[in-house]
Length: 279
Length: 279
Image 1 (cartoon, chains in turn orange, cyan):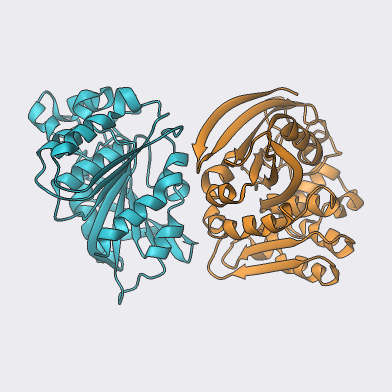
Image 2: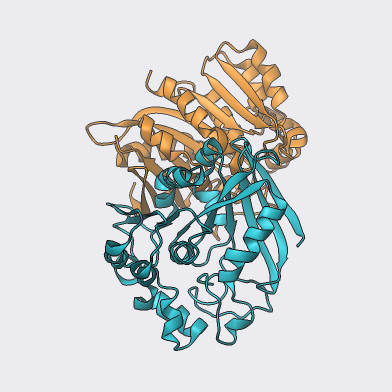
């Protein structure tokens, strides 16, 4: 597994770096970014927060706009942001912004033409962490967070891999994708009519069935234009009633779906994860 | 002077808003953005930091990437970011990224074809502040800051308008534009061979001649690829030897020309300006 550095910027005493590599799982070239805090060294491996972005995003949106590095540098947490799907001319795509490239939904697609490359679940939970641990001064200790489609990803990957992620957080997650247009369109394409598979990737269903205790923090803006039709955080909150772990949903008056919302509260998420990453 | 709101996002308890308007000075439609801290109201008008961006930028780069709002909200400072030139199909342009649209250099051009629209000096120092004070709960108290071409703009506008701006700061400014390729190309186009006009917009020359005492803070990354050929901060530092006001140039090992550098030190700039905005 070789990786190629394509950019680096010193920031808050640490480093933001972008890399490209060939993904065996996705069968295409991929780019990711990592923030390494100043504390990271071979003698002092640091924990990692994996960040999963929303529809249309790449590794760059969070790194450029979230304002996360000041606190991550203070706490000594690395952050990894990956692309939101396989990419390239040889990869299937769709005219919609909410399917295909930029819209991988963090699942392993089973239906053609998507099943050839769209294995984001395996990429994020297996191939990428292995590559990160091989090439960077990070430990195996990890947590997961994301926004919108990436909030769905953080919740579902976190709930399904309770030994791999110590804590889960999400901004404006697609909380009940089997019941919203974005989720129904994507799951129909990626899984066909196999509703059992759909349910395996619905955070509200997974949470209601979970026997784990991974702590969860969710922030949602009340002026988010996608709140009612697409995001459905109250379904997640209802599902949490039977959950044994810490669960907190915070609603914020006036905030929307943008990175301005994320920037306003990312410090809380980093300090939340730090409680468990350094436990 | 009417303005039209085109976006708004709640952020850190305040608001980021974008507006379009017809500029009489530039004779075209323009867009600007304002951050209003939570303290701002008609009964509590807040001071303003004007932010001038670099080559190719619009009002969005700083607002999305600088991470300035946390501290601006804490301190109660509004921030205004404008576009970097007149815009539109009717406005002269050049194939280069460093001349014409996106490269106004904060001067009033005197040579055709640029002289028809390129009056960014008057726009930033006169028309825009008047419009901001008319439409928003801000006071007349102001400071000025910017990056690269906008650092040149902040220094030159600040040094030429000592009653209007209480403090000046710059990241990676084009410090001696009469002596670097970017400045020579732009000034030749905008002023022709009138070297007297060139010198009126060179921060190092202005600083060496200044009888003012406006405090100045400059941050420069030592790994900035433009440092030697284009930016020349040591010319500015030499010019400051005879300056009566506070002058500080800070060099930062490892940092480059990007917004990751700006984000790392914007808090220092905001607290520097606050010393004078609330004096």
